[in-house]
Length: 148
Image 1 (tube, rainbow, N blue to C red):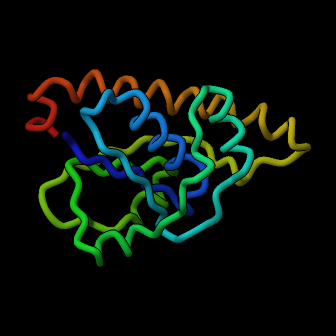
Image 2 (cartoon, rainbow, N blue to C red; image 1 turned 180 degrees about the horizontal axis):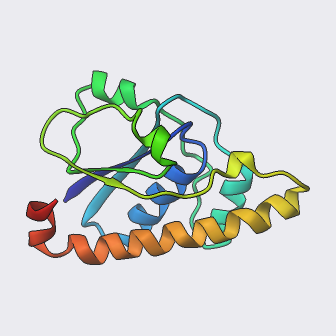
Image 3 (cartoon, rainbow, N blue to C red; image 1 turned 180 degrees about the vertical axis):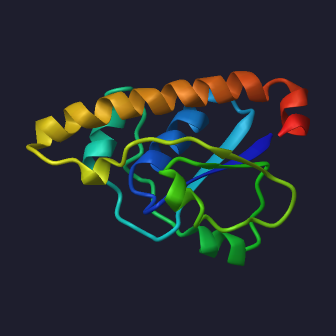
């Protein structure tokens, strides 16, 4: 089983969705966790958007990446899901892990009514799901882990 960590700024939206999708779609081949460069608060609209796909992340807790390092956690892959400048702030994890960068808009920046924000979150959710599905397919090839 491959251990994968998804990191974004506050661990409130994008990394939580990626964790939820990989654990749900990875068919036991992966163990996914998520963390933030800083600890945030789980976005309730993201929870709602994920429930629309049948994945319940409502019990997820937000975590700081630095705390995972302090606890000696290691990962086969660390995937940043925030903008490039923020991804550069992601700490380096000990051990041999590949780093992958995916860029998605930040739902915490959305404005409007709850429904308008949900309408903006759904396409990001779907992009993250597609990225996770691609990752699962590519990571199934042992060469993937040696090439990255």
